[in-house]
Image 1 (cartoon, rainbow, N blue to C red):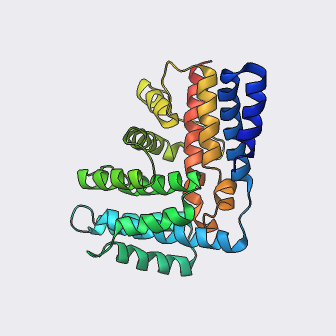
Image 2: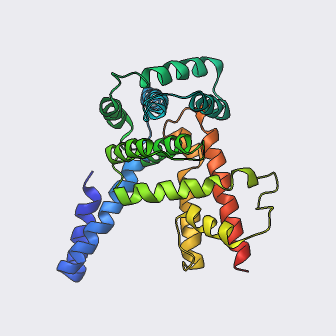
Image 3: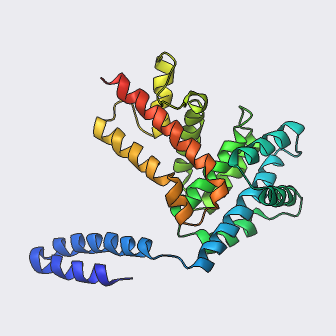
Length: 265
């Protein structure tokens, strides 16, 4: 889709010359991207995306659990707990277990699995980010990220199109967000007394610095909430019975943001 680039580029050139052409091309590119993102998927495309996401996340769960050479009873329990937290139907839970076992086999190909996923879901950045978030959440669920797990996650992140720097930031953010997991309640907000450590974790959870301005922090918060919004993820094809993790993540982000806002009053 190039109409936006052409029209905006011509307008910019006629108004400001070569500089206007560059500005117009950029504005037109953003417009074209917006139009591309608004094209609705057919029912068949939505089903293909849902199936691809489901199969990819659970087979990679199994492969990640096997990353250090064997699957421990603790890792199986963690995976089952995560499945329970997702609220899977009984049929989906049974399928998820089979996919987990398949991913743990020695002949399982991470590259082939991600290639198939990208062919169907590659244009949905939120789904790619959500997939990586889910895998990181499983890896850190036992409180420790083993080197073999981190190496595999880094490979997966690269295949999904994320840079090494972004991957490191995602790891830090999800670890920090997890610290607010038990702090979300019906009324929202962080109940415990604020400490310097908790506040530092809140900034990391949002991917910002303590020196960031109020507007920068609000922008980062709003983007994270938007990226993890259940309705948006479902609209892009995430299976409906798998959005609980995203919902929990938005609650953690909300708690971290509330803590920062309160500390700045």
